[in-house]
Length: 246
Image (cartoon, rainbow, N blue to C red; front, top):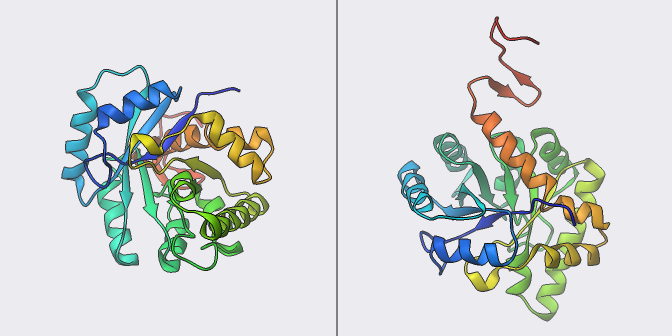
């Protein structure tokens, strides 16, 4: 298997998680991840600054990025918080489930990942229009592994059916799929090989499965820095200085 491998959705005890950032990093190293993101639920830039300070205290053999996971009350709240946090976070993840939140997240190039759009829904939380918007705005749709670990029997089969629909929909519309742990403790974390095996059971080829934890998250990290740059205007369009070569 070719890496590097990234898990961009992990919560620490700075928000909803049970383990310290150091414990999560140590477990990620044991599981052979090349990079992770501590993506805690945050309210403001002060939260992010505090978490970033904690990350910097830890010596690590892997790359550790700073994520912001946003659980918005409504669309206006989502827009406001994305705007306020984008400058400080390496990755912006939107906590999905509400249809209006799902759609708005897919419309925003400042958003990197829409997490579990199917959460607490009877449908999968996506349609063709949203998948097309996600493709246009480079918003990756997350397959959240923690949702599988925390469900059983009939409920788990329903979650898997929703994942399967979103995978097919995204493949048809060209939207990116990213697989993340959604871990809230070290016991929710798994190795890259386990995610790849799971995605193959959902009908993905091994190459596409590997991409969900390698090329897709790597492109998110690269593009996140691009979006935060002063030259960025919208997808496919950036400001070029008069002295810069075309």
